[in-house]
Image (cartoon, rainbow, N blue to C red; front, side):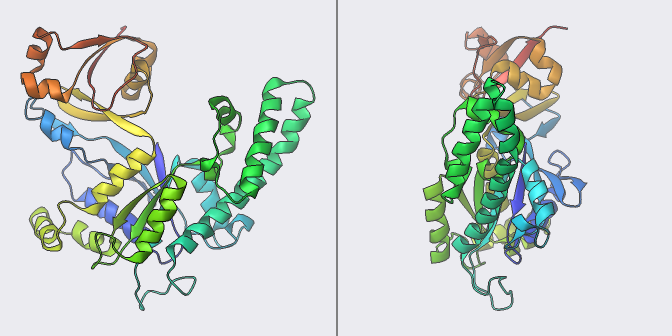
Length: 363
């Protein structure tokens, strides 16, 4: 699963991405930032449950869950018609699973806004309009083929035509597809189109260094917009975070204390992006490693096992599961087992956030 960072010019998008890069590179080898390409990287998702587990199970390594972030080319008005780097922007955003939009929520006469004035909701509308127009074009191109196939009596094609028309009507009302209720069958019918406004979104309010809690009225506007669209908001000073990320651990802790932060705001972004992607974590724990693994909310035990290795899903027999609460109460896995608290779950089990698991598979 991956999330794309988007934004207009001069809103702090690249500064934020570079801060994430520097922050991860400065951490220990168990928390790596892996650069895939100049604009892509893997970022770990901080989870204090890992620390709690290792109080009882001491491993050689601790490995957090991770997600892929993509710094997507900047967008300008008219991108849906190919303006600026519009085509590159659109092709990249079609490939990601969620959108992280950075919006500027601070005034600075030395940093000129592309529109001449700072208005984060207008920035949001600019990008959303381009994505709406691009999605309409995609669906219009797909409609003719779907209609021709539907004439032959193909049931799937008939459903596809119906869903395309339903989506187009929604887009024509200037509403993104993420606000349209579709059944699983309807979603499957259009899943191959990479519709951008159907992707979940997280708004990142880039605030001034003197407004780390996001009390500026500009941030309130973003929060209200996000509330109306069912999205979340995270506040961050990209400039401050980039400075913090370049420090060694002792200096970083001192600077965080000086500005009143318990942890870098980048950690909040990673966790919020994880949530936006619809992910939760299960854990595997042993002497070799304690590790968090991502799974899609609603995934079955075999599907979760497949995250570890693709063969594990088809070879799944059962899962042995306990919780952090069990571990904190009984102190050791063997004592959890002896107390009869180790649950045995089959193929129909739906994974819960925080499950600590052993998967048994066929050889």
